[in-house]
Length: 79
Image (cartoon, rainbow, N blue to C red):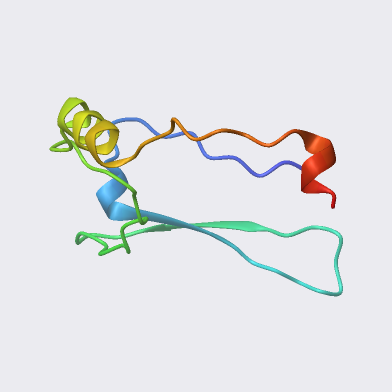
């Protein structure tokens, strides 16, 4: 069985999709909720945003971290 929805001109702000888990069944139905008002949803956590200045981050990182250390050969690490 396949659960899917087809919509047109429907803002995701007015919808919520949940998976209903049923231990007694091999099938987990998908439930689409439509609302007349905006559904507040939790925002997924992110590591950055549109305002992140990656060039400045890279420059500051390069200035603060020195990677010029000498690496030990594998046989010295095992001792």
